[in-house]
Image (cartoon, rainbow, N blue to C red; front, side):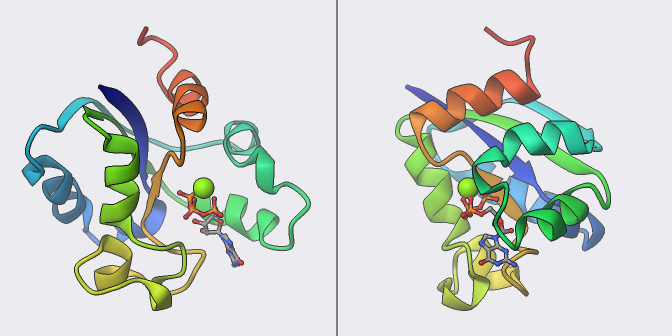
Length: 136
Ligand code: GTP
Ligand code: MG
């Protein structure tokens, strides 16, 4: 089975959508939340997390946004959970996201799209180490 890192971004927390989004993950059969923590992210952590985007025009505003309030970080385990949570989230741009997906139902602008989910097994391993160094 796979593990993935999910972040409920500061907009999801501010808008009172933690329960809604966590509920959608929990209701998925055969997935298990194995860690969950609310925390604020500093620029150093975000630079490591979003390093692939450094230099892009949206990078600085993204880091500002992601450090603008607490996030909720979760580890979710289950079969094909990496692809599955990305599917549940919908496309990056909420305008392109279908109703029924988290971003499609609640998203506003591309930067404030409520949720992060690892996009590959390699990203998941790297991000899990960054956010939950204690887990093996
Ligand atoms: P994450 O799960 O947060 O990594 O989203 P993603 O994998 O769907 O998108 P990606 O990794 O390409 O981009 C990371 C984040 O940067 C997105 O979730 C958006 O918040 C933001 N972002 C990406 N592309 C753009 C863009 O073209 N414009 C703006 N303003 N923000 C962007
Ligand atoms: Mg990404």
